[in-house]
Length: 561
View 1 (tube, one colour):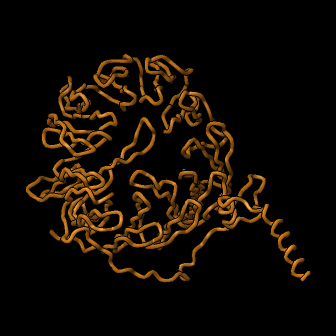
View 2: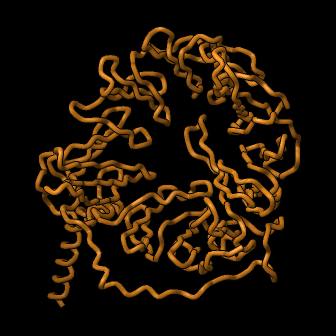
View 3: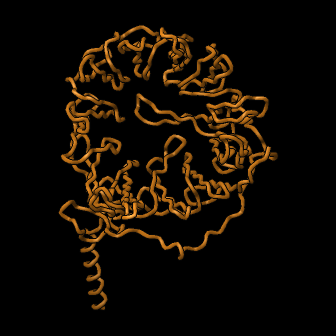
């Protein structure tokens, strides 16, 4: 009895000695990606990754077995347009038949609508079926509205449209629907735009305004013959643009243009102006004439900050950047026009998003500094290297051996990643690497190209998924990695990464680099609660995060008439 007890005690002691070496699941996910204990260039940085490259031996994979079509209709009979109802739930576009091989439409797919569990509500009849999305200037993020933009192609005695690429005998007609199918305008407009409160559809000679929540018609306004809608801002302002040709004082024919905005809240047209910026925080930068200066007006068109700047940006967090006249100096102002920062001397100054600004040195265009939302300099170019914005306040620069990620606010180095394809760059060898921010993950891509003695170019690429500390979660690999952005509200942004290869197979990875499943496909779209769509050479598939096929439709041959 003593020997087993001693063995048990020894085993427990061994386990106790091993436990402190165990890290968190996230740490182990990175460290278990195949990292050796030492790397060749350890002095350059504390790399937590492998010199090895992940290769896939496709000859050893089980051949993909084509599944039968999975096509279940929501109702008893097929429907060729959306019939509003309250019990669909969220609707998802899916690709169906190939669109007719005419003019600019050759190679496009017709789309249908189905429920999130794959039941077909509308057959593939729409030339366009997509969620309404826009970029919020005030929040500096992409946003998706709970609306669908739909388009049908009508046939008739219509002239060719060079703007859309439509041939004679056909025209586009757009509509908008609630994402849950509870209301639908019908495809009756020449185009449609939307913001959170309003939908604006353009008809011949007028615009119809709908409530974005209910589809109820609220109002309409007349439009000039050459006028078109350029955009609809979040605050319910419609950006109207007009272009025309006329003779100048020398008798030469020239293009003229003017812009206005229509206030949907007050049913009032404001303008014209020569130029307009983005309406944000109650103010819009405008200039009245081509040679006049910029100022700011409110939604009634009244001047709040008079014309006095050579350039003016939209307000964000109570501040806006302006270029002072007669000098290469920018300054941040508040909503009264008072300067709230020191002068920033720069020949080239612009927003790079999320409150960050880029400013070139006044004496050296290629030397740049990066500033925060108050105009304070937070980060400067590293000596000999060019900084690039990676997203969410992080920057990186690349040498011929590594990519270095920095925190923008503090300048602190987050990690160094040794390039697999590192090598001296010269006139015959080009080394390139960049990084894409994906939630709390980074996708590193690197490319090495060269030219042989006969002048032929060749190259190779590698990709890797890293966490914020530089741990490699997947790769390096030849498979192309990209972020699976959710087209429906971006709820899945950063949660999944897609890997594709030259064999047109796609692999779904979770944010820790774990493979979920693989299937054929050329690209992937993500919808809402982890529903995915991929298109292969012969079919469209809708599936869940476990690879269960919800809908599969084989593509028909090109339609004739």
